[in-house]
Image (cartoon, protein in one colour):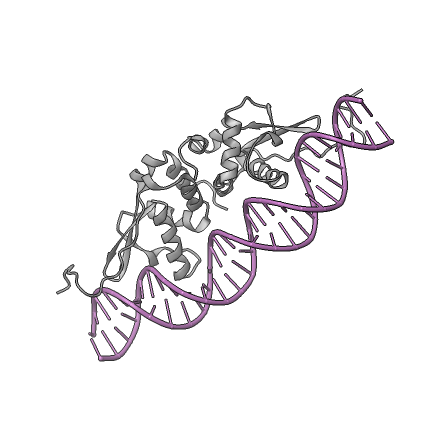
Length: 114
Length: 114
DNA sequence: CCGAGTGTTCGACAGTCATCTTACATTGCT
DNA sequence: AGCAATGTAAGATGACTGTCGAACACTCGG
């Protein structure tokens, strides 16, 4: 019975930070990285909860990818939910935009990157 | 005659980058630093061309301050003009805002820093 | 011409960060 | 139970960065 029953072997649920509690410098630092920009842009072009971490094609290994998602969580940019062995992602558009108006739009603008 | 005559000993004029030619990552990285945030906030609360580099009281020495101003110039955030031995500064509000709408406002918002 | 004030450059140093490899935990399928 | 897939944790490493001290360059005033 694959119910959402608790008990023994849970996986530690991902730790999130709400955008309202994110310092400005943390948000800027999180966005000041080419890999993370690509992650949130990929995320922005897909429906919520449809992409698991391994579905992003950035030129880094799993470990680095995991690290980047941790940074994005801490910056209030991404929310994650476990489903089976996968960890599904969602871009926190509204919440983040309420805290830092316009910033996410800037980061998503398909301007430049390199 | 202290004219603007050329000839021998010029001081190399500061090299500027127009905001239009600044990559997004450069702008974000430039703003993702507490010292530089304080510099542009100080700059924003004084009239243009009234502050020389040594007039900012950030807790770093001259060398580091000079470095930070170089980063700000490269990011299209600050314009500098030599007057006597001093180097006067100006925040490039409109130009930068045209390139990255809302970003400077965010950085100047007296929210948090630490 | 000398000296004070101002700012840049250079070398060194410490701290942070992005990355990799390896090992481990969890989940689900067979 | 065994196994493949997914993601995290830990340690190592290389690169970048913010800082300082010292040396240098330029400007202006005595």
